[in-house]
Length: 379
Image 1 (cartoon, one colour):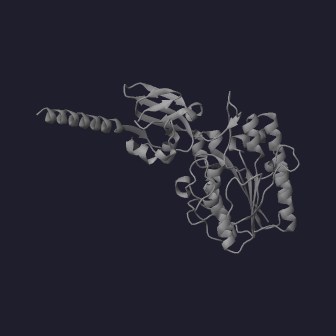
Image 2: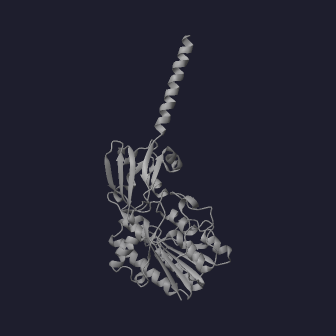
Image 3: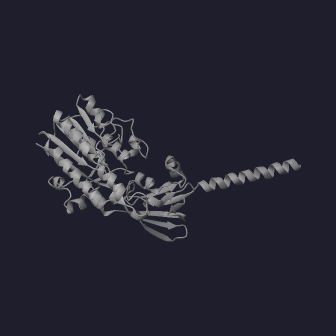
């Protein structure tokens, strides 16, 4: 009898623990979607994004981007007691985490949300293009298929014998506007104004480059977080090579992303001046002297490098923008007729205070997500 009572008590205890554990994993939060639709977040949401979780959970931005948000202005949280909390996303993005039990941590403040509402930036209504449009545009101009997973659209109906892709790392749209007003970019200023573009999330070079080369978003091409430098999906470079075209690339000190399908040249800091852009320019000009490739990618890293080091808007970073602009002018001066030129950034940069890096990027904010995209046909 004593044994039966003990087994009943122990069994009852285990059932209670399992029930409590099950309850702890069940939660439900209402999220207002970009079109005003109601989205229900639950423990299933957590499981869908669990691969991105760290000690603090995973960034709420992952969920917001996954449901269609691109550039966020404010976040409003209604907690279980009915209190409404409003945050400017530019100040909050890097410190807002969703935990497995459905709680939000906003700069170490623990919130039990009942509903989340998001206000997108007014810039969203001005977006004209995406980084995912570049591969389809280049492919269309060259008369070859877009990469198999491309979802972007062609930004031009022009055909061309050659396509030049000029990659200005870290030169976001807002920084472009500031540089234009400050007179730092006389070469770029001679071109038609760029389209207001948007990159993909997280706005970092590896992820953005995968979107650039495949024409697809991160959930499709699989490069959706730091540390991944290649995609298993077909890229623009491979399509062009398979079509029998000459495909070349000039990079910085190392490959930021695998460039399978291209003959590439690395440009270290060979003169010891602290940067690679002058070497990138020299190598690009050398390629052009031998004859313009059918598809040519040139990647300048210096604006991003200086932005991290001294912050966007600092005098040194401004001088680097001026230098890269001059390099763009020299390359354009050597372009043969019937060339489509696409000039773009992969992401922007925001200033940070009190940290090792004076500038950074990686969030759903204007300075990080908005990029300029120039489409220029040289006849």
